[in-house]
Image 1: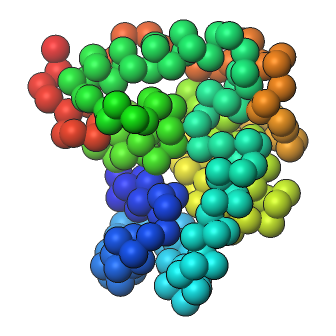
Image 2 (image 1 turned 60 degrees about the vertical axis):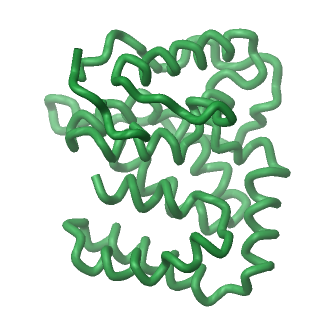
Length: 211
């Protein structure tokens, strides 16, 4: 899904390579099959980043994601904090990717949101949404934390969170409100709504044939 691929890229460090790709992203958005609100939100973010001072944008990114644990792009942080169960959860995620014949860089954790979005973008649309739906709670928490800090990145995470919602048979979408959190706490949510059953099917090197 193009939205997931674009958001994955825009959540990266705004270095020269990212900034040089912004015109191409803007052109892709103009032709993309996206909702009007989604296209407008992404186009506004791209335009704002393109107009920003390069050094200021890099400093803002570091303040947002490197110096504020509550804005961590590692999603298990928002479910488990520093709980000892986080390690097994990360191992389970790595096995999940491996089942899709996907290898991730040795210096990156499997719960890193841009990586997860890149993975989801390689799946069929519904399958990608199902994958991210397991992380809706963490996405809502991250979005709430970023919004509380008035970060423009809250809009990007909000787009992904909305796409990750599962619609019940009644047509209703039920999500609990998120509050700002401190993921450095020791007592994480030990019953997170993340279920890693065997994959039915594909990330970050193109998925190979399904086993």
